Image (tube, rainbow, N blue to C red; front, side, top):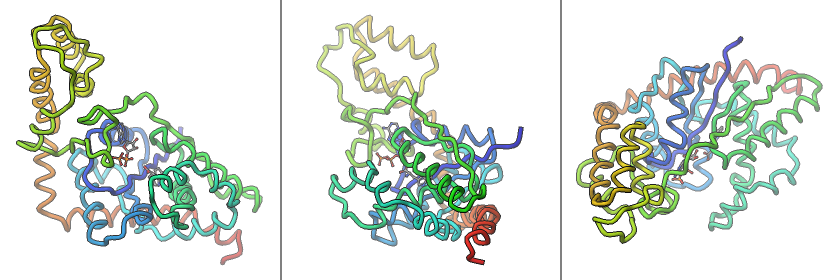
Length: 324
Ligand code: ADP
Ligand code: TRP
């Protein structure tokens, strides 16, 4: 069986939180062993809503350092920034010429963002075309993403098919989505979905007093310490489940049900788990932060590798469409 190309993009919106880790990054890291992985930081996509150069650079760096610290090995995959592959914008234009306006008008992500108050600019409107180019330019086979990206993947397949049909050649490969559906939604401090936009997040690399303060403020109900508690209704336990092995999970659940075990106990347990789980990565992050040039160099090297692959896909498209 030939090696599969795996691809995913991460929007640079600053440091990553526990929801990002368990909902996306962990799968990305696991997938590296399963094929030829391409992971990129979607800085062009970020521009649809972020207009501060210093901040975009910082966010891009933060995401890169987080991934590297958590064990992404740049020797084992291609890790890069989206804008280092100019073929992506070239393909975006060509796909745009084939994309019916009505397909974009059906975009739920666009409608959501406009409803949230973002200015309805053309970049936001055609976001899925850029995403399709990201995917198709490497002949990707598998695209691991969260359920919210399902429609964008369908659009990618539609556009690949359109280009192939229009020019009567198999110029682009249709990717398979790999929707990570069974990943539980990680709750935030207030019990809603953990998200930057709710400001209820715990960053992966929070530590010391900051981490303690956040963990201690996770919302719980008012059941008294001595009373039995239902672990499945508790935000603290929902987080403990992410870190603990089966035995530990059962033991803590049992403590909840027995009574005499307070939420404070559970929070202390969770605090220790978060600290231990990311201890090694935390050290690595501190080291990487001291050598920012090394981090940018890794991204640029990855960009060269990615652009070389993109060029092999783009070349026949230029010829067939008559651009060369
Ligand atoms: P945010 O809501 O903080 O802006 P993003 O939408 O940028 O996060 O999420 C990036 C990735 O992390 C997505 O693939 C998403 O599936 C995953 N993710 C984000 N928050 C959570 C969460 N609370 N639980 C599980 N996965 C999450
Ligand atoms: N839209 C994705 C998100 O918000 C990020 C992204 C951009 C992406 N291009 C991609 C994901 C290509 C997968 C493949 O999370």
